Amino acid sequence: MNGTDLTQTRRRWLGVLAAAPAGALADAWAREADAPSMRFLRAPETGLVMVRGRMGGTGRRFNMGEMTVTRCAVVAGETVGHGYVAGRDKRRAEMVARLDALLQMDGRRERLLRELVEPLAAAQADARATTARKAAATKVDFFTLVRGEG
Image (cartoon, rainbow, N blue to C red):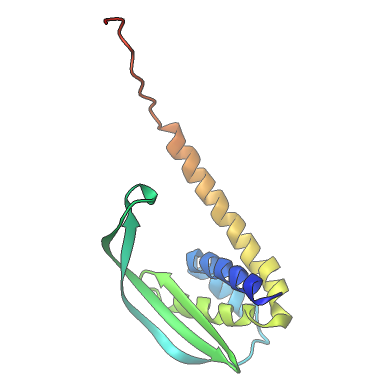
């Protein structure tokens, strides 16, 4: 896998892991009995980030507000894993960082993508589809009648 492909793949797995439930991440980590030892490069810490938006998705940027985020960084040998999650769950941020480090290791990447990331991504897509169906069921179509007056 070349550098660009790995960057895109890593971006995807970090997004999936960041949105995953804490229990699923803890279970995945528990299954990695032979994982290398890791130490904190940056212990889990909670802070605020500014969330930016765009009017209509394409217009000028504006500051929408602040959001609580927890971050963590671990190191295993030469590999650094990062974890950022919404909210204050320090353990979840740590699990994302640890799993990110493992996913960067060539000998583990394909298996973890297949056994962890892909099932989590599918479950997240199903949840989004269910939410979209529920929202679509409440949609009201408004229309305008054109009157024949000149």
